[in-house]
Image (tube, rainbow, N blue to C red; front, side, top):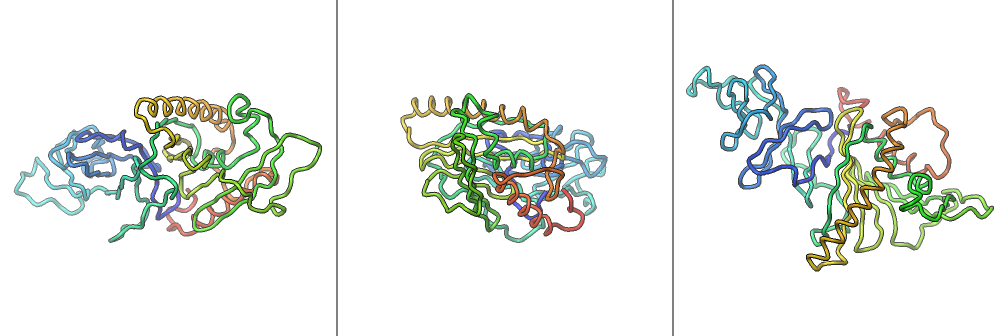
Length: 329
């Protein structure tokens, strides 16, 4: 993974008040819960005593109690009591588990993967989405490294072949460019697609920025937006589980329908369509080898792959900032 980043890891609705949730994210077993006041806590899901899963235990106030021997851990990961020693006996400092900073933003939970800090940077998200949008969420497990899932959403040429009965209707196979903008950990590109007419596609260097509100936008490390119109967006969150598995969450954000009952219906219909499109992608992407992308791979690329090339270069540069023990993930 890329160090010193906020990773989207869970839909907010998945973490209930006063209930432990055990998940695997970024190759780590985690236990996460929400206290009665809504405060989130996330710890490594491994007791410092003999390695039992804390998520199988229970909450004792704002602390988690290990199911094996009753050790309790606070929000900092510090063990506060070892029952077999007695409540009056100080707990040795080595009885501690890692605590991960977590934040909630626009209905998603984000985890800091990086160095401990006194203050943390803001979460980067799409400035054109606020809490006035409504949405439905679909979560889909993929047997693929999250980097391959990301690349699928930076790939315009697949659309008429993978989605012939949804977003690929019309069979527009020619991709002009696309025009790509990069910078500050972001990639934005404008795919222009047309039917075969006997003329070759324009190269990316021949393109000027199109005068259109429709574009695709990726923010490192793991969120993507299809900006369809001002009041309609599709966002995907590519959540790393481990080296060979991910969960892709997709949301259709809209604010052109605000009447409660009708809004619910529109969101449901949008979610059904997004599910179908996502599962069409999954069926093909899960066949790709290798499961994880790298800067230099044994592939033959063509001009329309320029957003993917930009992603690989930027990811490689960001990985270069990782501490040595995190390199190569």
